[in-house]
Amino acid sequence: MTTRRSLALAAVLGLAALLIGGGLLWLGRNDDEIPGVTYRPVYVDAGPMLHLVDVLSSDALEGRASGTPGGEAARGFIRKRFEDIGLRPWLDSGWEHPVTILPREGIEEPGPGANLIAWVPGKTPGEGPMLVVTAHYDHLGIRNGEIYNGADDNASGCGALVAIAEYFANHPPVHDMMFVALDGEEIGFLGANALMRDPAIPLDRMALDINLDMVSRSEAGELYASGLYHFPDLAPMITKIAATAPVRLLTGHDRPEDGLNDWTLQSDHAVFFKAGIPFLYFGVEDHPGYHQPSDDFSEITPDFYVRAADTLVQVVLAADARLPQIYALRRAPDAAVQQEGIPE
Image (cartoon, rainbow, N blue to C red; front, side, top):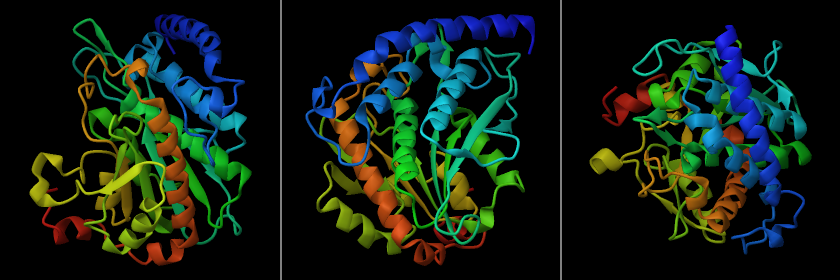
């Protein structure tokens, strides 16, 4: 790391440390004492989850663009949470999985990128089908002098991913689970593609990708599960959860006729889909803050977010219970895309 880059990272971390101190508002409280939250979660620890989103979407991290000190700092905060909740690094080399970040407009000398890969062992570690939960931590950085903090997109997905992982670290699953904080989503799914190319990643064991991208902001209390058009055998599982879920769990945004509202290829799950791995994508519909400087922590809906995270744990529990059957839904690489007539 160059001296200039080291100084920049140190400055970002210093500012973020101040925010961590201020963010203690979310920590050390009972879930029924958290501002803006009336729902009492069954599965997730709401305070640390909200705290992580608050930190990741702070001005100090300058929008978490891939290859910047802010992106590197975000990675450090997520890694610390992985360690604190008792996850294991998947790679022998540690938590970080390298992702090459190429120069682009405004970032002529990007630093290295990386995914963070953790796992929770099931009853037969290293054997059988594996469930993968993903969320990207990068965002748009600074554009025209304005910081794009990306609270909903996608600090929220990362906060939920860590909260889900913590539940399963304390309640071991039946099958191995991999939790991946992905880099480079906003610039071409770079982290997800790097994952697919690495022989150290057991693609042949992956039964399902549950991808979380924008799960914290909905005044209507609506969370979408997308992907059932492509994998209709997953529909009964989602329908059963939706009947009693603490949010309004809807389906859709996955048909070719939806046009720009077809989310099939619009986040990291697209890479798994093209590899023939079933997916479920969870997110909210676009809101006024989508890809705008106004996507700040103050604009999320905390009560909905906590409800959404609890719902997502229910989904992961249900998928874990029937993972061998879900594994049977895998297809040959790109077969799913060609079958549905989706352009590659």
